[in-house]
Image 1: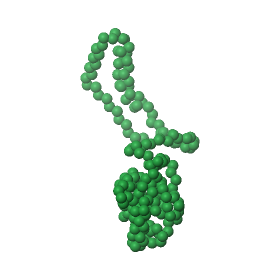
Image 2: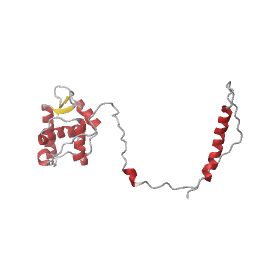
Image 3: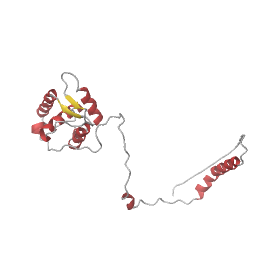
Image 4: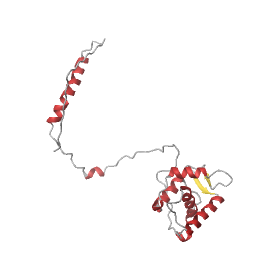
Length: 196
């Protein structure tokens, strides 16, 4: 049993209450509050120590409420339950992602590969990050906010790598012709470095 100490020392206590309200319950309430402070230590000391009961198995059976968290930035990156794309990656065809790749390289590569392997030309940020993190954890996971940031930087200008369909929620990203050329370069560099 653990050791417990409680000490209360009151050297000088002055309590002055001034009120224009002649309610006699004020003095009674103050007295109750003061006595509760003084008796708490005695009550704790006199109470025998009891172990908390172990959790019952039936506690696990009852449904639990889930907290609905919102994105800090307020932007929607996709619904919590997203579909990931599944295929068996053949490094001889597509290379393989590396930890040294930038988030942009990983995202562009993934968009290109799922277009070729899954016949899907557009995907949300959440779908892309969840798919990459499911299949390529060893290559360092993608944070959805970082992917959104990097894609956003490359969707403008004459040589934009990406486009975004904002008519749907969440927005769907796709590769431009420049983006497809960039993906082919990433794949060829990956193969040259021994991934394929």
